[in-house]
Image (cartoon, rainbow, N blue to C red):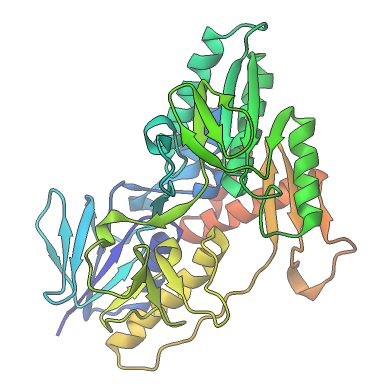
Length: 389
């Protein structure tokens, strides 16, 4: 009997799982890939398009470059999954039956109930988002003067917020644009939850780039012209970008699976509360003992391979593999510069420092993205993208 395997999403987890499933499934399985766009975006480099929209061709890859001819692709929005009927419900197409489905839809922005924030801010969850930020920054800078520069505020000083601030600073410098950049974080320090050494290194790069950092005061309200704080004075903005949180996709609202804030909970083998449904990437909360795997590109890359293999194992009634996340370090860009922290090098060698920047960190970040691109497309494609990474 032919088994219908369906993968939802074209992010890191979805694209990675498709690549693995194509190598694992035999002729007794039919593979269908469903996503709302017909390309894979290297999301952790999407901030590059804020500075220069022309990089889009180097950070997006058509599904045809990833999917085998035998893999059916459907471009549509997933609006639900009926686990009783075993169908995926789509916005504009007929429902798709499945025997096994892998949910890899990623996340959407969380606004934490802050009044006005959703209505008055831009986000960075897609290529279109990055291009919209670029247009908003360009328009605001054209309307500004040296005496009254455009005020750009980024809410949330995690990875996305820091890298967004860095790209806007590069845009300002390249175009000699009158822009003031503010990075706002509710907690005591930027890049919350990370080692103080990398926090300080990133703060130094941001301040060198002229980014004004505001910490330890949460946003309580946003309106068209300013954001309000719990304690401090309001901060005016011409452009407001919010990168402060994630939650699961609305498509998972009413799906009969155990979840937290629409992120599906799974065992360490990616199996959900329904044995026919697997979940991976940011749309999943994967059990790792004391705490779940982090919602990062690194975790999604590692997990996708095992999740794809486990679906093939489930079809063949073989035991499922247990996945354990391995933190291989952190690399964060601030414009053309970067900071690397606790990176695990190849061949088991040790590095003399935990945190470093300069040419080594910049090229390490490029190498990480290039390695991923090569894994889902080809080495030549990765080589062509190098200058934009």
